Amino acid sequence: MKRFILTVALIGTIFFTPPSVYPHNNPLNSVQILWMNCKNFDEVEERILKLKMAGVNTLIIRVFQNRYDRFYPFANPKKEVGVYFNTFYAPVVDDILEKLTEITHRNNMKIFAWMTTRDSSWLIENNPALLESIYDLKDRSIIKGEKLNIFNPEVIEILKGVYKDLARYDIDGILFQDDLVLRHTEGYSNEAREQFNKYTGIKADPLIMYKNIYQKDGRYYVSSYTPYFWKWSEWKSKRLSHIASEIMSAAREVNPDLKFAINLYYETVSSPRDALAWLSQNINELINHKFDYYAVMAYHRQMKRELGLPDKKIYEILSMMTDSIVDKVGTSKILMKVQVMDWDTQLSIPEDEIETAINSIKNGRDINLSFVPVTEDTPLNIIEKAFNNSPL
Image (cartoon, rainbow, N blue to C red):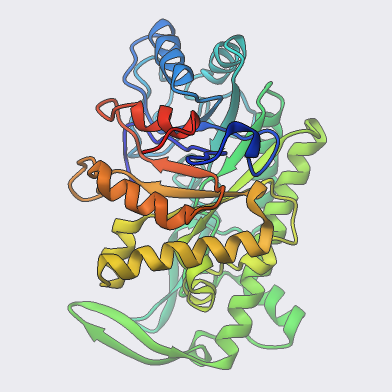
């Protein structure tokens, strides 16, 4: 997880239309919080009030503590890794969620809890038997990975228990972290291979999955995939969607009205076949399940760096991505995330560049937006303009 101070997710944002023409009746104007530079809950409430004045009506709060995450200054950490709510299934760093929920609701705002699945240090570090298995392209062998084996029934039951305990709080929703994916060399656990063989009759042998493995600049790559690989990736995407659905169902047993959002990588919308290969993420599969929001990580600078394309082409892709996801799920369920900080320099992106990205996404349409991430140094005027529908 990239470590940033504060991420602001702006859901239900309309820039050029009157307030009555929102894409849905109850837009979420939200902020996604990775870290807050607040020493106590009084300062937290002051910060929340400033966000509310800028038009924010929903907080999305990080409720997990992985090994290299920053601790909240207003928390009283009792564990180095774990979660920020009471549960039987994970170490409790500090139960700050109850107080955050109280503050948020007292100010007539909603609160979403942002939680991990496969990338959970508290479960990984003390349970090596629960680690996934991956294919090492260099040695041509299956080795242990660094994340959880999501196909292990014990892992699934623990996650369901954690999410059920999370749902016992008076929260309004949950955001799945972007770790609920499987890279092209991930997922080779015994459980996964046995299930795949039972489902398809095909042996999940890495030796029949990849073509032309080669080395470049000290790293190993695959030039193409076999038909067996595509069946394997399709199956993995179905299983991931089904597991997410199981977790949602478990949480909704406690709170039937709980909303769920899932992060989508930009490739999932812009290049579905690549996303299926690299991430086992398939939007056509995900829309079969009851997610309330699909959050597209349309980070233009990241896309430019990874794709090596000029600005004009990147902005064209942003517009096409929005067209595609709107056609699939409609405007009420999408959240297009706009990058406002450079990941490498940690500096804010100039406003005119952000505006170009926004206009490329909206293209005259009513589209929910998310600014990612906003720090203490980022002026809230751009958020206020968005939520008040003022011209940029």
